[in-house]
Length: 233
Image 1 (cartoon, rainbow, N blue to C red):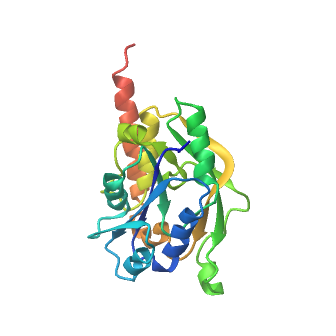
Image 2 (cartoon, rainbow, N blue to C red; image 1 turned 120 degrees about the vertical axis):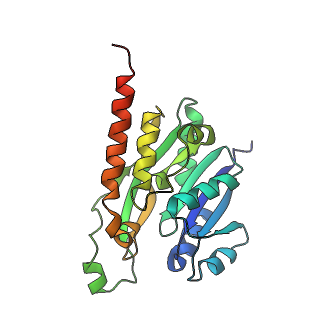
Image 3 (tube, rainbow, N blue to C red; image 1 turned 180 degrees about the horizontal axis):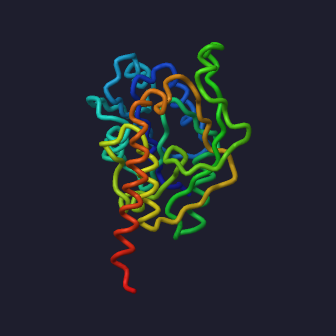
């Protein structure tokens, strides 16, 4: 029997050195069928040539709008009833989609599935560059970020798209809203994502915008207080 189609979506901004690895990690999935959408968020480093070098990639270019805008554009193009997201500098493990789809198919009331992440320092970095980034976590960790997630389209739509106003904290904001919407989630024990640490990680590149994390947390607290205020005594 054929299994459901999954839309795998990658947003990329000047990620040419790593994008091919990300795409190949999708191609290496044991799960079929999937479609792969790459949204180029205004890159000028050759990311377009990398993406277009893979025949199965649905490539879309847009003017620079940020990570949230790129993901939202990919969602608009997605045809499947299940969504997966991947950052252009990270890699899926080969059984990622298979493990997560098994979990969703086993529990019709489950909205989204996560897993564990392992971290690695990008091998091309020299000693000085390595000294400028934090060391990887010594053991795989459970993580509820969207780039580990497989989610039902209908569940995603209950939450809405990613923020296009934030430069950092986009995924924190989205997961906070998902929790407030009452989505049921499961974190698998398996490692489903390999996260690359390098000098152009978004948190380092946008370090001057880190105060937006506080904005995200305050907005979540304000929404929670407003919801509590409307509850009957």
